Image 1 (spheres, rainbow, N blue to C red):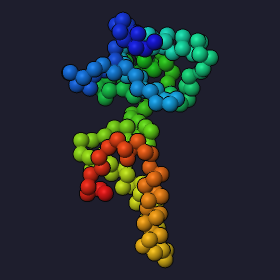
Image 2: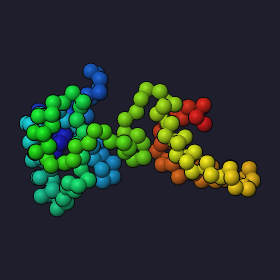
Image 3: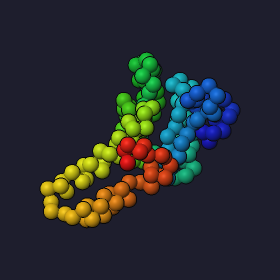
Image 4: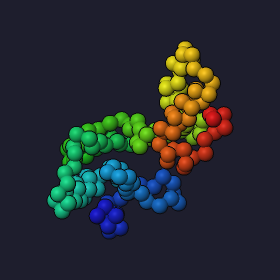
Length: 162
């Protein structure tokens, strides 16, 4: 329904670059990220779509878990207007989505620093124990296997991080 609304011009998605395609939704399992312009018209259209979807599917939108993030330059009055349409919580930024940082910098070392932090937080206490090098290697492999596979299979991890 969102895709049709975008195609009809009733709602606008966003572009990350002038030649990039318009993005209006990203879905994974039961999570959906919706991208839109911050206009009351787009918000009303999206609200209508969400109500229609809930009615047709019998599913309910979980307001307590739903959040909105605005562009930093969005005026406060506009944020309040959009908030009154949806009632979703407004957050400054999302920290993580599917285990990955939601917002990433340009440096791959910076992007994947969170992996180093996760691994280090799990293994830092091992040095005080009398564990053999082989046992530590096995434990590190177990920690690495616990990292979601899409992180390890979709990205080239910088050599200096490895």
